[in-house]
Length: 265
Image (cartoon, rainbow, N blue to C red):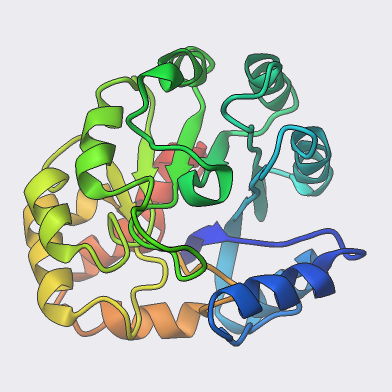
């Protein structure tokens, strides 16, 4: 069984342009779906994925209501668990978090580089406190992003500081940080934070994957793909080379996600 904790989808009207733009700014990444929920479900079927977390990002203050309206419209808490998003410094960010909670969404996605902030900015403490009070899960993009130049807003060191301001689950996407193996080991491994495995295939050196898995343990790992940019089959290829026991693989592929999302077995 697979639960994919890191996917993306867009409203059908804007999906073609969104995918084209994201591919271009990332150096021509080739998408594996058309960027819609229908495309995601087709990929899920091919990859034997039972449920997906769809991560949405509000890249500006004016966009966040529409982004969350879309998340609410596709969320069913069965096979699609849509997360909302807020623009961190918008005047109504805290109220929008309440709307996210009230409409049954289980978490939020924040992307420091797309949203223009550093995760350890002291001004974000009220936002993180509100997220925690509402019992929401937070997924951060961590490490580099191919569409942006350094410095990056969510390095492992910055994430370690921000983590202290949460009392609800935090997920550092992309094995704790794209291209940040040493920093992940130094600053995040062993802390009370989850990593997802998205974009690991052909990008996370096996040496670091093995070391992170040993130091952080499968108890804090979540299967993810970053669909449409990678597929379930691609990410399983990396996991299948790590010598994991069946029990540990089950934790990563679905059991940890079931606990976080409240999915009955």
